[in-house]
Amino acid sequence: MILLATTLLPVAANAAAIAQLKAFVAGTTTLSASFHQVVTAKNKREEAGGSLEISRPGRFRWTYSKPFDQLIVGDGKRLWIYDKELAQVTTRPLDNALGSSPAALLAGSNAIERDYVLKENGRQGDVEWLSATPKKSENTFSAIRMGFRSNVLVEMELTDSFGSTTRIVFSDLRKNPALRPGSFSFTPPKGVDVLNAQ
Image (cartoon, rainbow, N blue to C red):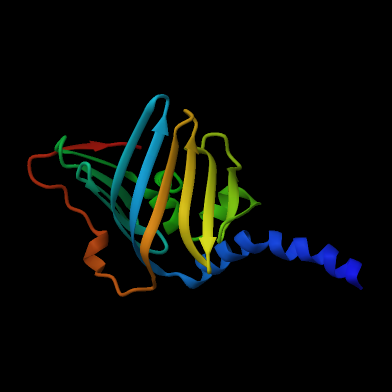
């Protein structure tokens, strides 16, 4: 009997992160949080911060407030990226963008399980980690790690095909808050260049 318990224990422990991801996705229709982001590339490190709002599926608002103002909005049909400093807006169909940004990935209905192979990645401190490997080679990210605590996403690490790593730590995360519908619509400001990508 002791042998059986010892054999079963690792299985239960190893299932923790994927089980928490599924509970998080199933139990979250809206989400708001603050975030701190660090992008590391060859001899280069950039830090940024801001806030996000998500209404699943397909609607999100990802606002960078430092070191520069940038807004990324998914309105359910299109993705809008507004760079205030450049006075430029880039837009493309949302279907072509899902999975190409952390916000789009989190806002999808089941994009993570549909597009990625999930694997338990162990526990570090009080955070359970999983890794997600894309099933298609043309995916923007070559690898993703997600850290969960108490069925809540607290951290993401994303590696792109160029070897850059983006680490995002979430704070003040609220599940299922009431969000303004207007948060997920975007009209380009007058005078900005609008680039329509496919």
